[in-house]
View 1 (cartoon, rainbow, N blue to C red):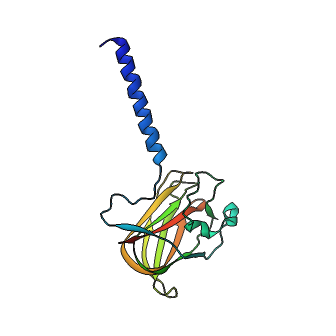
View 2: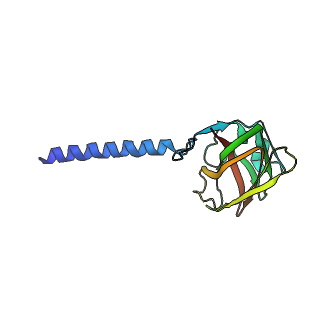
View 3: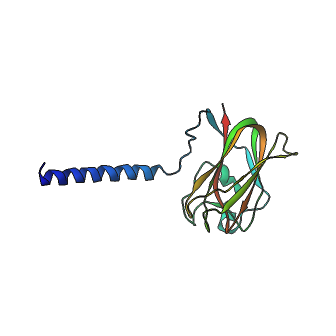
Length: 183
């Protein structure tokens, strides 16, 4: 093989490699739940309320942004729902009793990668009497980048879900909360 053919092959290889990595980066975080043999359907949330109003710039956006289906951009000035130095309790009403297999929270660590320290999950059928289902710990993601925290419930039948996060560092920046029903 001649020298110019080798150079041409290297250029083609570099071009294909860069296109592949560009495609991978553009995919980013996605909404699908892949790699699970169960069949899921995204459930719309009827109502959401928080024990503490969002703070700082996120306070003007409100908690309804958590269920609007739109993911915020990475970085500070976006549509993140923010609780700085506060741990809210957030109640979600699905409108009817559903068999939920997975809850996903789109969050962005700001101060440290392990900022979302813990999530306590409670469930209820009537919205009055909640029982603690489980506590989940150690969600780690890149700082200043949105990531999905996925909580596997196996199969919980309830209408109301109460999420109480705990932070370490700065606080909470959340973009979306999704409930996935098992079909």
